Image 1: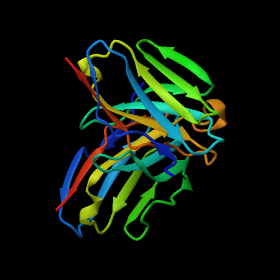
Image 2: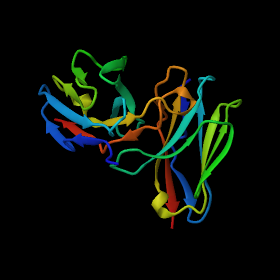
Image 3: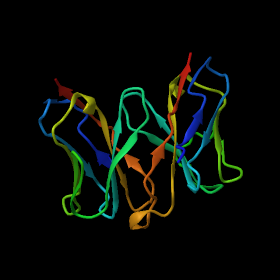
Image 4: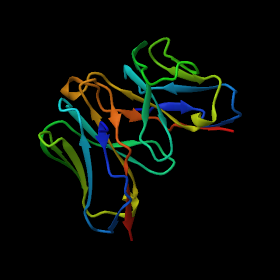
Length: 118
Length: 110
């Protein structure tokens, strides 16, 4: 079974530029997550999709970040314009829903995109 | 109080010893608990999930859950230098979304 795919793996941009990340989840996984992970911290949820609908985007900085999952499969996350503090690893993950105990199932991560904003 | 708390470490153990990693959580209705391993520069990798009170063993790893005391722990037996990584605890509280701790850095000394 193929894992979660992400691209690009690395991106360096100047502040105020825009950038987009792509994610393709594990086949059959209905729930897709985007996380931001700053060095030394745990992953912070930015947005959660169930099929092509948004379940939670409470921590997404909506003035500069946007995400979509149009056909309920792959997803893109965009930052426009980027700030220095956006430098982080952006992780995509997916789960098959529902899992045991009724909630989301086991979550699997893609390799991540390391973003550096200069 | 943070929703999921872990000691950031580093926790240093000699090769062959048992490493004990702890995690506490604040939401009493949490039902699902996970341990992830994250090597430097890599993404988190799921190593254990636990849903019921008690112990769950998988090879050298044992997850322990105590819902009354709101903690979950991970024991690594016969620790190897290759186990050196950051271990992330994740909890699904009543809101049905994953909450991660900040991770504990483990160093296994050869």
